[in-house]
Length: 369
Image 1: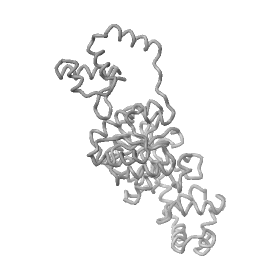
Image 2: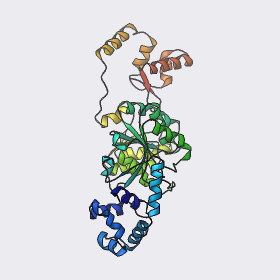
Image 3: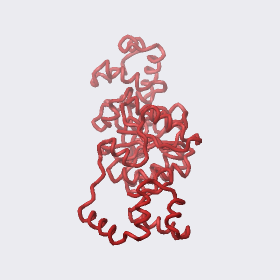
Image 4: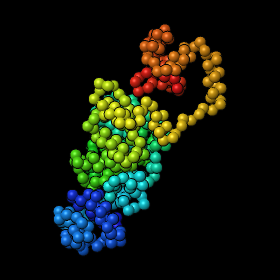
């Protein structure tokens, strides 16, 4: 029996987790793993220093060849990849966390092709503000070749995955259930689109495992472990997103948090992270700077064009707006200077935004680019 199948078999045994399997791997050479099938409970206790309960579970589980055969059949039938911690295809970044998952089930691209990952996580109750933040930061991250990793849940996770697909980027969804029981079921079409557009759906749980509450901390560890950094958008103090951020901190990853209104419960977790030293995100540049990515400089031709426009249109409304927006200002402040009706100003601001002259920050204020 090959090493991959032995590890898969161990991973299918109830109550046998990564810590136990890693202890077994560390105690014996890979070539000796097949000897597990010849050991009784006393052998296991003596050789691997495990408890009576664990030894009994392993012996009973390895005697059940049917669970392995059924899993292998489902893997083949559903065209699913399996990457074990002993395989070269296993993500290096994830391999070096404490107690990494032994098995990764993958639908879509092999995870080794994604070299530059960043997690974006947040509340299931994320609102229009979370959507606006995601829509603002994701396209720039995609342009800088980041793969967006999230948990596939409703709310902020779904926003992150969808925004990535809309920006023609690649995204990885890490599930808290088996790949054949994707949770939430309402995102089944999203998961299909992720795979079709060159991304991946990933799980460390057996293919038909349900979405049990105890699965999600393990899922969150994988999200953090796969990523070079973690961006938290809208999360309360006790949210799963904050657990993911804490795992990221433990794994020495970059942690970013987007601030919000002080009286919004969904801002409390983000504000706590910032107070603990997380990087405050006011634009995508805050994230890029942390990774040493500097904004592209404009060409001389663009500089000359901007200079000419400034000279020619010095008295124009656009010039006045750009001058006013050297600092972040509200719509009402612009309206006072523009002295035109609301509808015309809205149209002007929209066109200037499309032309790349101004933008709205996370607080809804306008500023020059």
